[in-house]
Image 1: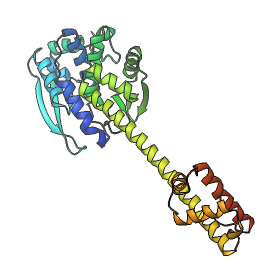
Image 2: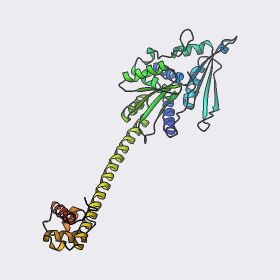
Image 3: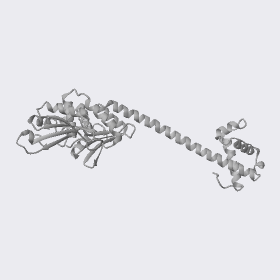
Length: 331
């Protein structure tokens, strides 16, 4: 295990941090779920040190690091119950604006090692267990608690205003595989990829991300994502309608300009006066109301004039100008 790192994306930090802090504060009633939660948290936030020493507490040591204060306090209170020497310290990150980091230092006393064994982090021979013990995720409530611990330890989720994306990082490939299988068994569609020195298990899509947040207990965050998805859809529809309207206006303006050019050309050549009365009347109507669309132009014309008739007559005027030699600015 390696020390927990805050998400690298600046725009996700506030929402991710608030979500993780909320999950770390949520109480866990059942002992089995508490063990699963702590197991996921320790795996993501802990570094197990093995070194020489005459005394037991010098031979092994665990350092649990997190930028989430409620998570650090939860770990501190748990390991303190298994023996003396547990310390809660603070330091500053060299990056990310020198944020405050909380470190729980756990000595290698038998009680503490037994606690790590119960959490499925250490084997009976004091070796790290990279895989997820099945006993910790056997029931639905324990699976949700385990995922909560993993997310609080080293997870991130995009702000509701951005495309939905949730991820959990781990240095162990086996652990990433097990985590992906757990999510698949719950009906999700996770992906896994390698980013530098970390394996990333991620979910995309607002529905799946919101559902997982709700299962972990972050109901407010899940609701915010759902509301964000609705707002994004409304904005998208509004933009499509606006773009369509703007395109229609541009086409109508271009067509009206071509019609006006044709009418002016026919007048200059002395052709307009010899055209059928209906076309002469339409030329006068268009010249009088250059900004109106076809339907509005029909309303300004004589009674019974339809939009289709207006369109047909304007096209005949343009065709007459083209036949007379006008080639520029026409459809």
